[in-house]
Image 1: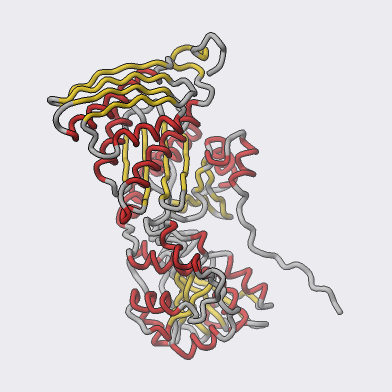
Image 2: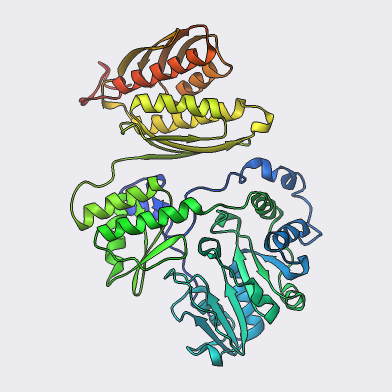
Length: 506
């Protein structure tokens, strides 16, 4: 028997841990601008979406994930027998190369396109050719990765596969070509924000779907991944904000002398010589981008992350300060997921979005008056009440602050503030002590104010005394959170290089 040899295969970029160790950062400091995925998962991606699937995880799904296939069909206005699901669209790229081009020919449109087409051809023993009119199998990447362009779809004699991984950002689709024999590929990895779930799907005529499904491994998509994808389809993505951010980022890149090409995707491509040099120069800032043979590609995330990228670019290309330190922290429990980005001494730029309106507002007041830059995006089981969401949002911010403070060196340590709010008055005193002690008296308490501050104290490892009273519970709570913020602002002020303790540590 002849032993098989390893083939040239797709190579993943290095992990956060590997990259961080190279440049002396923590893995959590690395921001991935190289994966073309959103900055955060969808609100539907929380443990509750998996509860039913986890309860039956000992069983096989015997319907070939029919609920998900029906939901996909309804989403596109097609029939369920025109849908096959797989482990990302990559499963279909490899499978289709073996079905339609084993030992034959493959072409891509454009010629410079997603590298997986080439690796699929290699696995199928196929030959890559440049002329799509002579190929047995033609992949059209529309919009194209890595260039972001929107190519025309040719009429070809071979099997046509239209890869629409980024179609949500272009606002166009070629689903009508299914009726002409084309196969359309889609994925939950990009606009839906479920790259880790590995769910993709093929849309084609029923007979073609039968051919595809007959060659798939049984249930290549797990029941857990199918559950998350089904939940995501209930609230389809709105990419309007990311498209606007793409245009803002493109203009900012142009102001730095770079020339991104027009993009119909969630990334920007900048033709340049030696892009690998720029990739390496950005790594010490925790900014991970990607180089290709003819250019540099950067994912569009959100304004917070993109501003860090721009500050790093500005420092490297035109001179000036790089981005200041930001703590990135994620807290996930069975009930909630909280994503925090925090700069304790910032400019009061705050966004808190968890769906718990009143305490989103309270945390916003605390962070703003503390002078923090805070972005907290979270989701919780609000259908069961506000307790878990409120507790975990404050615990998550406390954990991030504790990490940011480190050994508490170089800060004033103590802070005090009095804040009136109409008839209410609040007094707060804080010690960034490293010891979690909470003495909170809020009267009347609107429900969770005392517990929210206690949760913050526990994970931030600070000592906090608060007394607040008045007639209106809203006014009393708001005065208390503002007072805590202003006391924190005073305690966070720079104070030399010492740890403010005669012991030498806190």
